[in-house]
Image (cartoon, rainbow, N blue to C red; front, side, top):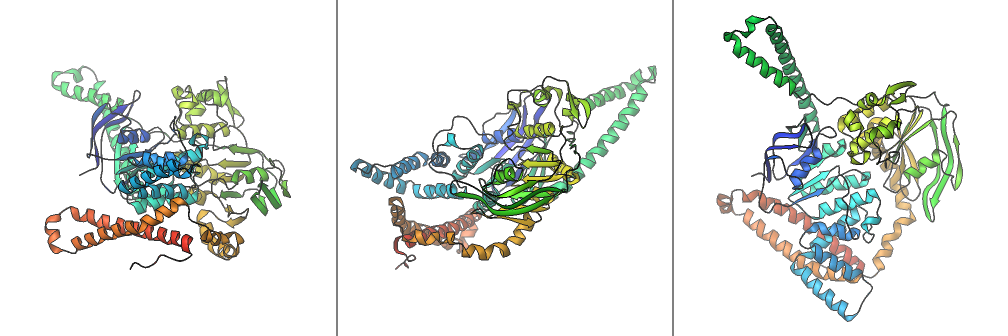
Length: 632
């Protein structure tokens, strides 16, 4: 039985329905990717699955007690509390308990009342399985590199998205809905998310523009196209092949229909003979064909991307020698040298906060280095795509952001009507009069590209240009950059986009070390082990674990350590019971569909036991300097 079923669902927000009498079922274990052009209705469909939106017509059936959690594309208003509290709120029932326990253990008071309250909370944690929920929250905070005690409303936009992702993961839902989950995540966090989702065997419905994430995660692809759903079981390669076949068949069908309609129009114009009684059926059929043609929804056009190249720069673009820069005691770049020539395509790779934007400013001469020198080439005309879209005024309309109060815009040295130019970027006249603040993320990115591409450039700087773009526009951007003869700096966490675009990569490897590699992301992965293994083993900074072994356990860790043996015994007892059931031939005669569920639970127990043993060993090492003692 499906976890959730949509039957004959229709929903409109204007003259054209976003969803038109569609059906969809999501089964347990599906990892379903929703694809479609910007504005096709992907986020709307996720809203229906989450229960935030209700259809105009149709029925949505959910299994009783179904738990659905969602990572929205935009950060909701009104979220309060620290990162820990927001992530813990995703745990459902134990959320209030976790928040109370965390506040008590991290507070400064240590009086008798606090000790008594803590004892009560620990007892409740034991009875309500709070420890596993706490461990899950702390693991998510650690892996997503979130500041647990920092208030949510003081975080940057990227960190807020990661906190909301953590909240969605903490709930262990039956269905997890993810709307552009890789936006604002660095490559390390994306890889962790992929591993976590695959290891957890969660049922997923997600929207993404990240093709590497899509290829690894999706077992089924559903495309929203002109209000209808097209279901493609299998991977992304199968989707591309079958979609091309479907569109070709649609073109052939339309061609035959249009040819027949044209023939019937010629026939009706022949005169009185067409209106004789014996031809009334043919006349009615023609009227039906006209109506069918009128209601046909044409495919969304392609974005017309054109980049106006300025006069060529000098052969040398940037030369940096022994460049060093840092904030306070934190080194960003240490003794880095590079030479960038005209036509080079440079990708910048590194974790969030590593200093990629800072290095760009150093190389472009916008920031003075602490040491070293930067020499810029001649005749540089720079075009800068800002990931925060600060070049757009959200209170102005699309047209006003592009051309102010003028009806025309200069593109490539000639005047174009602003509506005609915006049509190249898929903005209708009505949409051109819309305030930017209500545009989708993908539409804002298209508008920023449209604004930037009115200017000439021979040095293009793109800071996360792929966020929220649909896949077709993303591929067109790749084609544009492939034909671009100027110099390119690209900051991106999109692995496939990097591979297809850049010719060399500047990688932040920690501690101020910045290295340059030939090729894109995959090329860096192949080169990295030989270049990193020995230096990392020799770094004094890696001696930190020795310091941690001699520190004392915190009060919270001591209580956790005391509870681990009982938890392990309970897990092993359940594991032994399941092994006994599955080893009994009689069980299979009556169990039926229970078998798959028990086998899945057995795999979950094995993974959980491995995690608990690792945690036990870690805490025992901190406590005694030795590993866990064998059970007697």
